Amino acid sequence: MHIYLLLLSTLLTAAASSGSTEKIGPSREDIESHLSSKTPYRVIANRNDKEVKYPGCTPIRIWSVIRHGTRNPSRKFIECAQTHLHRLRDKIVNSTKSHLSEQQKVALQKWTLTISPDEEKILLVEGEDELLELAERMQNRFPDLLVENYDPLHYKFKYTATQRTLKSAESFATGLFGRQHIRQITYPPALHKDPILRFYKLCNRWKSEVDKNPDSLVEVKKFEQSSEMKKALKQIMKKTGLSGLTPTDAHQMYMACAFETAWSKNQMSPWCAVFDKHSIRTMEYYKELEHYYIDGYGHELTTKIACPAVVDMLDHISPTSVHTNATFYFTHSGTILKLLAHLQLYKDDFVLTHNDFNRNRKWRISKIDAFASNIAFVTFDCGSEAKVLVLHQERVVHLPGCPPDQHLCSYEQIRHILKDSVERCEFNEICKL
Ligand SMILES: *[C@@H]1O[C@H](CO)[C@@H](O)[C@H](O)[C@H]1NC(C)=O
Ligand SMILES: *[C@@H]1O[C@H](CO)[C@@H](O)[C@H](O)[C@H]1NC(C)=O
Image (cartoon, rainbow, N blue to C red; front, side):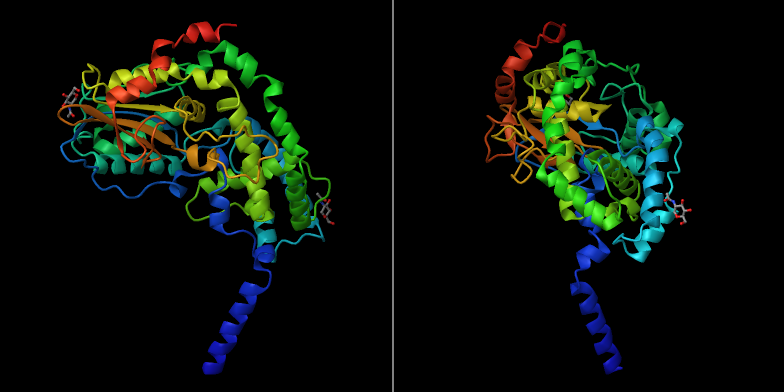
């Protein structure tokens, strides 16, 4: 018995110390928290949902934008993956040079993309859970404001004209009111280009100068040629036994790893096994740079155009507002990031370039733009004045200009900080081509 235990523990120790990362591959944590905008919300959720209380203050209003939950990939990805990733899979499985474990190889061999292009971008069960649980926690934090009885004079829910935001709204409402009550809810007509929920779709100048402009991706292209990318590709080629791998190939593997890991709480995609700690972070930075230049600080215009949403927010959270007390908008990554940038949050004191992979950054897409990412402004009536709590991913954030040592910031102060965006929100003017 003793000898058996000793032997067992010796074997286990040996297994743990014999270059385990190369054999076993990165852990679930290593992978899950570096999936950029495909990170499932469970990785970053704040599970502390104690009632939020400040002495002498009562929450009276909330305005919140919420990204839809975990979804299927786009049609484009599904179509590419169906041909290209299946081909790469066969080559890897056939390779005599791969360093994958037998188990990893078998998992890849069995891998196939089971979704069809017609199922593109639909919200998945994991996404429904994300929204439902988020609603429950928000209600636990603010039970007197997020009352359990639906009243259209108290609550407003709006989504864009997509299945994933509609389903997200319904899941969130289910979390607040219970499944049997969600049929009562009325929604305003959903728009594809909503001026508040998806303002950028109405900005022609942003579309042509930023979104569709190849020059926007100069740093991303440079990063493709960087030593970090070369090092990552080399590691993936060693692991898979493939040769001539391009950043695009690695990107497809990364996307498959990300989506398939997000979908399920207890399974990891077999594609994640091709990465190590460095290469998964390299792919993450690749996407971070792209979002920086398309949805973030990379272009001044991008940070400016969120002003219609900010005007709407200040209108709704005002203590003298005539709007609904609780307003929830179900929207997209592009809205969350541009709004964060407009609020000057997660802004680094340097401009991100292809050279900044090793620098500490605030602009971390996996943290700030996961599926079901959310920003909320909550007004408290504190007797003599109204104060505002700003939450991102259910955690307190401080707008620059608000007291950094206090949770609450006065409503007047926030109005003052955002004065320019309100008074000079010439959206149509700045978006004209
Ligand atoms: C709704 O908002 C009004 C105006 O700000 C406020 O007086 C009232 O207390 C709020 N209702 C709830 C339930 O918080
Ligand atoms: C894999 O190996 C088998 C048997 O050697 C061969 O028939 C097949 O064409 C190979 N597939 C690829 C993608 O290389």
